[in-house]
Image 1 (cartoon, rainbow, N blue to C red):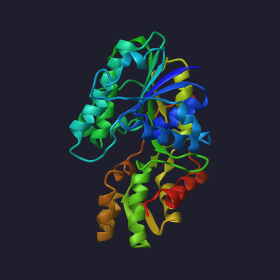
Image 2: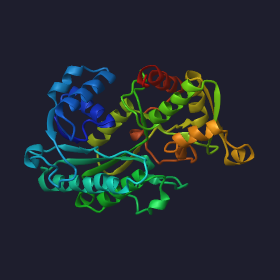
Image 3: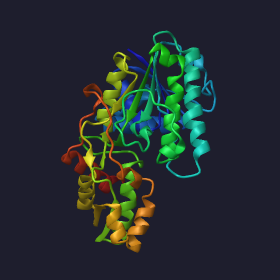
Image 4: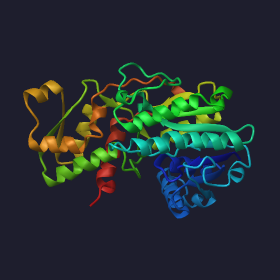
Length: 352
């Protein structure tokens, strides 16, 4: 039985990770600012999503913590009593403007505090896994490699969240953990639900976009909405079940490649995504170029929808290429899986 400590335990990825760990018989200490009741409910829901016994959530040990405290706001010697794998998953995810200071405090300073606590208290043989995002690459048009990043100016990123995740990786690369090769950075794609059922307990990423589109489609059905897209735009949609499988395999294996992209080898073209959404909602989503919009300006309705999607739409305007090896690639989202993901959320996940 292996020992694991997972912070941000009530998050989408972390709760599924914890569920998979306890299901295979490992010991898990869950760290979260949220209450124990919330964490256990999230883990129980995640276990159900993974087709595992929800009652296994009772096996999770719980501790309150704070990323603002170098000791994590808990009894660190207790948390690190045994050699363990520490999963740093806690983060603030927001694309809203004027949140730079808060994002830095949580995602950069908080990450540094987690490293400090691990460095001071973790027993020999322990490992540190930092959960990041593939989109820390910012607006670069070149292939993003599986290597430690260099500093990037805030202007090189679509939002402050991306910049904060890059800064956290840069800081981690300069620590003793990186020099000792006991650290793994897992850069995730656009997280979505279960590949077999489409079930997703998340309102972020694709689901935020779906929620906005559904709101307008149901109010004014039959409208056409154009979005400016790169001709080769595609999203690396990444099912949570495949992602957790890859995270566990990489964390258990050799740490000779400390930075890994957990993204499918084949991304979902935006044209396919739009067609799938239009098949389940009374709306016609159309990818166009900036020149198309200049020739035929947005209608008032299109302009409003685009404004409401302003935190998602920038990701449609770029083409991404991430270096990745087969052992880190979750299975791709096929047309069948894409239909499952969208149909489940339209049926079960949207607010009434």
